[in-house]
Amino acid sequence: MNDSRLHIVFSGGGTGGHLFPGLAVAEELVRRSPRARITFAGSGKDLERRETAAAGFQYIALPCRPIPQRARDTAAFLGKNVAGMLAAGRFLGRNNVTAVVGLGGYASVPAARAAGRRGLPLVLMEQNAVPGRATRWLARRASLVCTAWPQAELRLRCRCPVCVTGTPVRRAFRATENTPAAGPRQLLILGGSGGAQSVNENLPVALGKIRSPLDSWKVVHQSGERDFEMTRELYRKLALPAVVKAFIADMPEVLRSSDLVICRAGGATLAELAITGAPAVLLPYPHATDDHQRCNAELYAGSGAAVMLDQRQVSGRFDDQLAGTISELLIDRHRRRQMSAAAGRLARPNAASHVARSILELAGIASPQVPGRAAA
Image (cartoon, rainbow, N blue to C red; front, top):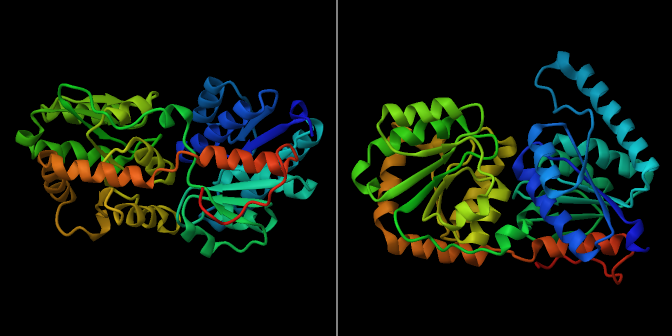
């Protein structure tokens, strides 16, 4: 196939953890095949629209809903997702789509399912040690599954190859490494692209208890839109200087200049920490599906690249435990350097290239080669 006829649809989004790895692979596909057409199909969230537009890719919204928590919502769930699959099928047919890449999450299902029904190649990307429900369900009809961790394959039931590529990160991350700037050291607090209420409530209080070690540090806190005013007001009441932002657009630069990061343990976040060599305190989201963030955090912290604090296993006040852990790391520069080196050893800078190459091979553009199970 001539690459001028190549049209790849990336299905999913919802959160930055699903969307950004897809953008990384899309960037690599365009670098390799400049005439290729790229479309992102998502749930219609502002994050998806904003980030795909900034990257210069086409975007369409498809009807979709997550698995309902109440039985009475089942009919609406089925109706919405069937409508999304039918709309996706029409788009795939009318626009000569070559292949579909599922990014995980419920927003990935309509176009990925439609690809299976139309016999198109379907590549799934899984960033977590425990594959999500959408990935597990779709894997039975996939042509290839690309995972971040070898442990993920154990939970998949599929006949297609499973390739451990690592989690793709955008080129802006791959061009940087952890080189904190001169001046105050930077403590970065992240709750993910949408923020995290527990992080926003507990971290300012914890930092208020360790003012002396924090004196020579600059605090940058990404709160998410919902908790932005509350988080900023909490720092003000505690008389703690902090730069609070709803969303950090230039994450590669901010991570590169950070001496310590406190964050959740989503797969994409861990890949970005590794590629920039940023030492971290990981706070896995306690309600994550199948407890996948705790599994991610255990694998990552087990390498020496981070310290994990699971809120469910903390006796007493969580902010007290946070304060003690953070205080020790703020004053122990040697340990932070060791963590940074360990993070760098986990980096997979070629992950986006590996996934893009596999997609092109399935599309018949690159030299044919069946993806193996070896790491990139």
